[in-house]
Amino acid sequence: MYLTPEEENTLDGEYGRSLQKAIEILVALGDIYGADRLIPVKSAQIAGVSYKTIGDAGLEWISDLEGEVRIPSVLNPAGMDIARWDEMGIDPFFAKKQQEIIEAYARLGIQTKCTCTPYYLEGFDVRMDDHIAWSESSAVSYANSVIGARTNREGGPSALAAALVGKTANYGYHLDHMREPVIAVEIDCHLEGADYGALGYIAGKDIGSRVAIFHMKDIPSKDEMKSLGAAMAASGAVALYHIEGVTPEAVRNKFTRPEETITVERKQIDDVYEANKEIDSTEIITVGCPHCSPKELQEIAELVDGKKLRKEMWVCTAREVAQRHPDLVRKIEKSGAKIVCDTCMVVSPAANRYSSMTVNSGKALAYVPSMCKVAARYATIADCIKEAGVLDEN
Ligand code: F3S
Image 1 (cartoon, helix red, strand yellow):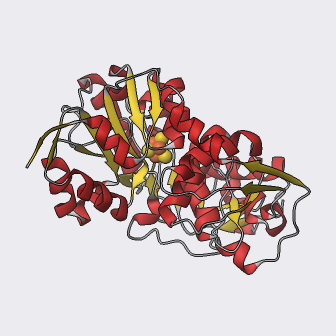
Image 2 (image 1 turned 180 degrees about the vertical axis):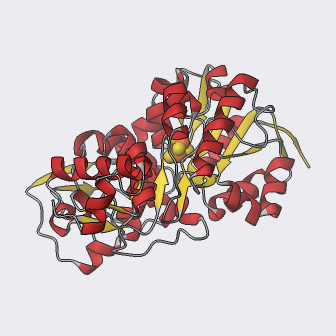
Image 3 (image 1 turned 60 degrees about the vertical axis):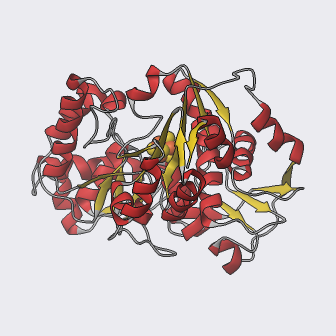
């Protein structure tokens, strides 16, 4: 792999051990995947934040690093709402460790807005063909597919390395030919809302880590594509998909039709809603996986307006999005639902206290049973609110 003289000096340790470690990670990945050089990246999103997932070893690794990131960099969700962790029932020891992790990242100049939807944040506006280094799988899918930007599915350490160096190795989804679809997915029915998360939950299993092109009857909204991509990244490992005539690269490029085609039928989508119906009543309802957009907050606010919910309901979103929409937050919280920031139903240990959960996300449906040991049921947003039950309607 070609390195500039400055990169060679960094690798030789001229700018300190932390930058040396960072460039070593990038060069090692570049060598494994056949990159020709390092390329500049516009921003980084760094996974490996929840104390639940990285533990003391991760905390120690981050704390040992020195220096400052060279590009706008932000964190993935942590294990708790930083401001309201006690209300979530988080144990003080966990909260202290979580805070230490966040402070260690902050010392490197990383913005401690913990979210899987960095594309809603100021300073992280990504455009088509921009090169970035993001880690969270749904954010990667959204950036690659819905925006047409270019990122590999970075691990926490490689995204952090890219943030410190300001570059990444030029391989994988940074290259045109790796972005061509190799499998087509035909949808034989009309879809709306949570149907897209169910579709992703089904299709991701067959697509695996390949690039797919969908042929659909409808034009999904950005939120619907967000749900589709998040679910496929969880049930499979899809980091990039196209929708014919809809997503930016499928509009700009003439892709050759892949030889392999799979078809998804209405019955398969309906089966996702029907699965686990034996859990006749769930203990908690969680929405906002990936974190809610302003439009999704608006929809929830309208659905709960004037109601008092009987069960616990979490609405997960980025703190910055919540702060920009205080009226929506007020309306939602008036119903008894909680706006939960910086974290989510999968990465917070607070979710493990429940035995059953209703979700409107294909990604949460894939992960909640395995990562939280909580039974999960799938529903539309309107049915999630019905499941929350209404005490009063005024
Ligand atoms: Fe985001 Fe957590 Fe879902 S990180 S995509 S809300 S599992």
